[in-house]
Image 1 (cartoon, rainbow, N blue to C red):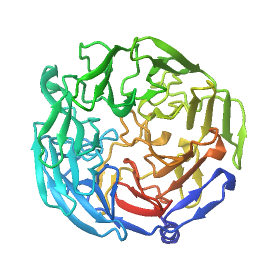
Image 2 (cartoon, rainbow, N blue to C red):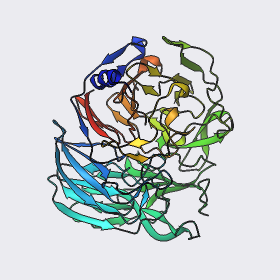
Image 3 (spheres, one colour):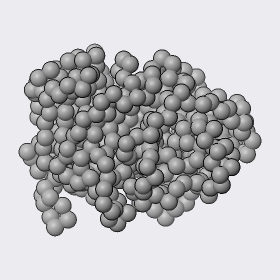
Length: 490
């Protein structure tokens, strides 16, 4: 990179673009950009005047096969106003997994916090609670299994932590390739003592992307048991609504065939199944009380498609953008991007650079082409113009992962099949972080269209991987990459 371009791009630290402005980009300087001590993937937790995230402990030695392997991570607390590091704690793990592998590693889970406590979760073997001031409260350790890609999530429910931890029951016996892989069980853990309020009898897997919702006025965990393409659990296909009062299933119901790695969510009181339907995008709503599919939404070409013609959006006929052999002509959404907001299902399609939306009240389907990268000199709409470093670099300039790029990943908006960044709903906006630095913002109070979609980027150079959800308060966004913590205006 020339010195001139580097100097120019340093000034243009945050690029803002909106469809209404055609290709014009508004430049907004960040309030701060703080280099992080090491690479990591968690989102940013905002609590009061503090921010919390996780990074790897300093990576040393040489990578193997393009990866560093590490199980030890660090929980960090920053002053929200200035980005100053206030304190940090080491969170040693028990398994050295790949760093930044498949958009998931031991640092992927965002911390959770209330006015008294913050909880960090090393997915490879430790759960730890600290006071907001950094005083140790309690921790748990376990032998983390391989595979090291795990989708356990954390929620606060009153004074309790809701998360899933490995159980004593084996899901896949050991082989020459891997040790025993256990099933997981949801837990409710008291924040002050670290003791279990309950441990659910329901078995889930390391790949279950569960969520919290309400069923007939009662808070529940929405979960499932679904085989993966490479792991067969022998438990059938089941959906669960699990009570947060005692961990017992309020309802257990059969599911039709579903795409692995799909998110577990309710829409209009029904369980959302992401279906495999060839060239079509298809969703089914399953009644938890009867196990029956009550509604199906399916299309090969949407009712409305808005593409970028080089200077503006125009409604036109939809044609798939990519025809990779890996995708086999499938029009399915990337399963981990399927996200329910009210009566709508949002998603990102594998075969295009498009964000999709189905309104389940009308059945109308809409696709809007979205940029996959914003650089200082251009907005990138396709993989041929995509620019990125040969590897993933930390703030010190060291390459910590050299296995990048995928037809399912970074060059398609960064949504891999296990991407951990769930969209965040804040007021009338949906904030959806892509991995190549672009934050997509959807106004979900208006019909989905180009007017409802805007975006921001924290990376005008093509060097940042933004793999966790943003932190949000009333005035600012807090976005972290593998390199930096950045604060910008909302």
